[in-house]
Image 1 (spheres, rainbow, N blue to C red):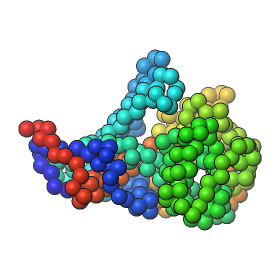
Image 2 (image 1 turned 180 degrees about the vertical axis):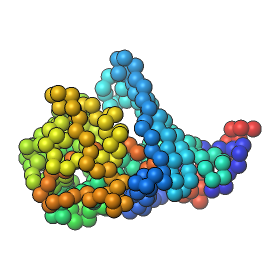
Image 3 (image 1 turned 135 degrees about the horizontal axis):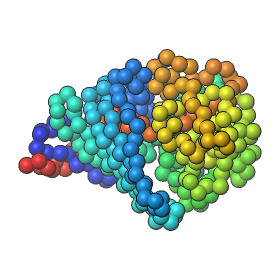
Image 4 (image 1 turned 120 degrees about the vertical axis):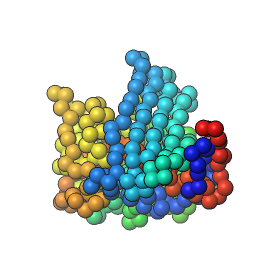
Length: 329
């Protein structure tokens, strides 16, 4: 990517939205980003976060290095939500990339679309590696930003799924999830689940992406033998973790840091049996027995932002998108 030590390419939200990329490529890029964590080629330190006493906002900073691409990046996220009202929510994310081989800045970009793709892509990879071989039915809980691409990426990863269920409480969100899915799979349908327990009992894969105010809380006793429960946001009760036969995490350290709400009555948080990087690298199995219930914790990995952001930046440059700003002149 052409750059110099005086300028920085700025990619706006409109620039990023204009980039054309397939769902299969998104899955491949994200998998390639996670795998090197197993041998230390890449680095993904724990995120930093700050929040005021009243919890009206939360800010994250994530620094990481993609050793394969030799790219360093910082992802910054700011979320202001004092009223717990999605219509009034303010959320901004940016990603700044640096070429660690040439020692040059690469790009500063809006990270909204990248984040909306990499998180469900990780859930889809967890499903591909940890779901039971007979998995045919998936249930998605939640209709926010993280949920919008969850079903298209899941079906791309597991084309054998023949029943897709959606449980949500916001009509506009339900409509948006269904419309987004139809855009990628016009010949398939999404069923709206009205009874959460019945839907969970019949699902092979359950993905919880709901927000903190959701009334949904799938209990371990609702899950069938062999079920995979993936937690991204909310929608799964702590029992799905503590009564699981096996626990997988994107990062055991991040799970210990951000999973406090999953602790049992005694304040204990169960640890992970395996990390996704080791599974993708072939160092650990995703599933040991067909009938075991697996809990998977999907927390953000900045290396996935780096890899996907770098790919978007290259595609944007090829399409002539973005603006060069002489930031250091």
